[in-house]
Image 1 (cartoon, rainbow, N blue to C red):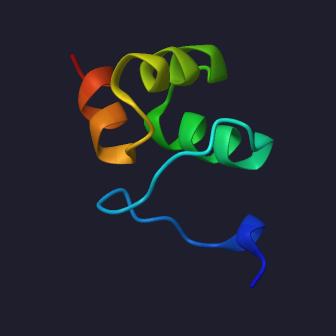
Image 2: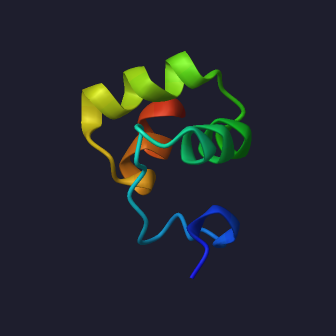
Length: 57
């Protein structure tokens, strides 16, 4: 499976901040900079659902 083309689901996925394509995907999805995304991951962990909730505060 080519994970670079994998379709993500915010209900179950974890964000791997060490992979540029994941950072790019989730930054675009949440409408934030990569730096802000990484800061949110550091604050709440790598759960996409938790990161999204943190960014919406």
